[in-house]
Figure 1 (cartoon, rainbow, N blue to C red):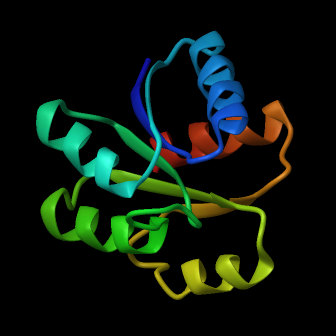
Figure 2 (figure 1 turned 90 degrees about the vertical axis):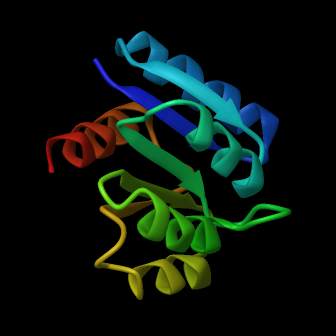
Figure 3 (figure 1 turned 45 degrees about the vertical axis):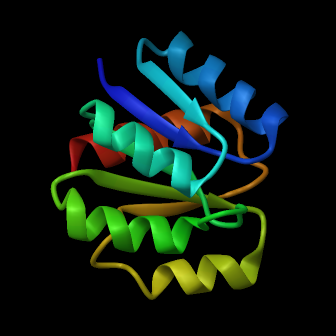
Length: 119
């Protein structure tokens, strides 16, 4: 299927997302922040970046901006549990595919990832 990079600073959320996406047949690399995501992107190609918005070191907004500049063909899907952060992300409509709200179901996650990959 797809090689997906997941940037999520909350270990339990990251593990759940990784297990779900692996279950759906994707290859998943999990990192803890935006800086680690950029390091991973420099080492291997990915089909999708699924990133939390609020993270230490480099948040998801800064990561999306860096990805748009350095990897313009990479699709970006964001996730957040904060309504204000969701609005910040919508200001990046040209750079990201969508924002999914936490908590989400595994079906919602699969639907969002499938839509982002098909875009």
